Length: 144
View 1 (cartoon, one colour):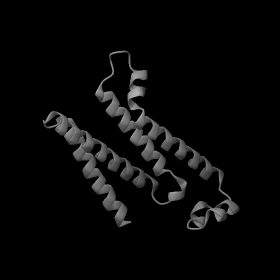
View 2 (spheres, helix red, strand yellow):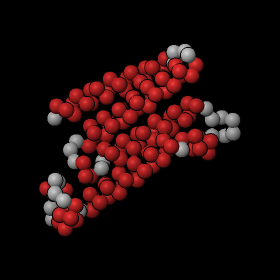
View 3 (cartoon, one colour):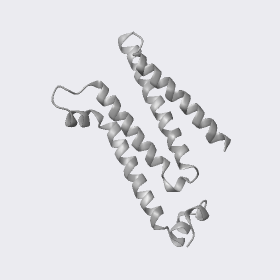
C-alpha cells in the first residue's frame, strides 16, 4: 500500500484508490477535531469563561487566555493535517506564532484606540515576543 508521501500531488481519487493507512486516517480525524475545537473556543471564549468560572470571577484575562488556547488547538490541528505534508512541528509553531501575534497586536490596537493610552507591558511583550518568533519560524520555513 502506498504511503501518503508517495501519493502526494495526485488527485483525490488516486488517494482513495490507493488507500489511506489507519494512522493517516486517525491523524486526519484528530487534526479535524482539533481545528474545529480551536475555532469554536476562539469564537465562544466568553461563554466558556462564564461556564468555567464562578459568578463574578470571570475577567478579560480569562477570555484572552481561552482565545490563545483556541489558537493553539487550531495550530495543532493545522500542524498535523495529513494533506499538507512536510515538517509538521515547525508548520504548527509558525501558524500559532503568527495567529497569536495577530491577536495580541489587535488587542494592543483596540486598547490604544478605546482608551487612548498605551496597553499593558505584558501585552506589548507578548505581542513582540510572538512577532519575533513568527519571523524566526518563517525564516526557517523558507530556508528548507
